[in-house]
Length: 475
Ligand code: GLN
Image (cartoon, rainbow, N blue to C red):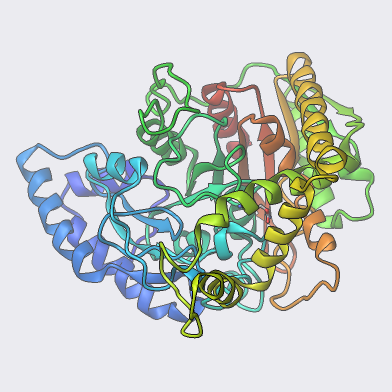
């Protein structure tokens, strides 16, 4: 039976005292990956490679030359490039495609001696919130295999949740790290836009996409942010400031804070009762501890989902133009000339949700509709950002649920896709505003389904966010 460690620190302690080896850890994760194969978390497990690397890392530890992530076994969402490894974005259109270079984050993780154990399923091109949109079939939640793990980084979340790796890396465009973390009882961090390089990450909506860790502890989230973050000559949207030592400076922050919660989270009929009671429980706990917690109205709440989807789809339609049947992966066998190569390859290679978004994105960018939709959505984004910033001037943190409900049943088909989009109501605010947000595991429903609450704070105030998060999970 493998021990499921909550942090790398605990692993290091056992490595130091020779109670475990990295090889032993890897074998344990691999055994569990086989045992829980039916959950469909991995698109591919790098079994031999992880095993041989584990021996190298054990030797490095003995020699005292190991990096800071020695002992950490990580799974990657399958939209993160790793040289000489396949990458598919869980799409047929990339079937068989192999990365010709590594993303910056992979290089940084490997440089610190992390082991990458496999690539995890996700919604196709990270579009979705249940990991049901993968070409390779739905992923199942370890807490209840009839339910989704959340999405789009659902495979990454389940790989950690079921102990098939220690931590995972996902991407979060409108909630794809935070929401699966909340459905699977994990910590999920979306850092400030511009914190972590997007070089080598398959683009969905570039003005929102951020890499983020899915972990069992706030400590590991801090460490991974520190190692992956910081300037990179291949991504000009990154902040140039030095990365703080997030993990070293991590300490449970007990000082008295001002916390705002969005009052609709408690009044809206769309929010599950157990999610509401959990939020109320934490509001009460914070008040008992002497913090100021106040309800606030967010007047743009009704606009945040449409604004996000107009902009994300517009960006996606542009980003996904490169999959043309010529450059990457899949080409239709029916293709006979240039036009049929494009048309047939894209029609056969993309799934329904991706095609819907490409078409809607193309529509909102087209002449005649650009001003009515795209330009207007940009303006509303600005208003949402300004309002969020103003709230965060007055309050230290915003506290909201991560998702309006816990993990929902697989196959709950919404006839209207916009109903599905509305489930993103609490995650897209941070994405539109570019501020950091963390989802924290705060207990289970009566049916044993994990619930997550989310904290948001000011841009680049990750240290404050992590320190308060550490306090919050111990409340
Ligand atoms: N559910 C949202 C969407 O479908 C967010 C996805 C993400 O963050 N990648 O766009």
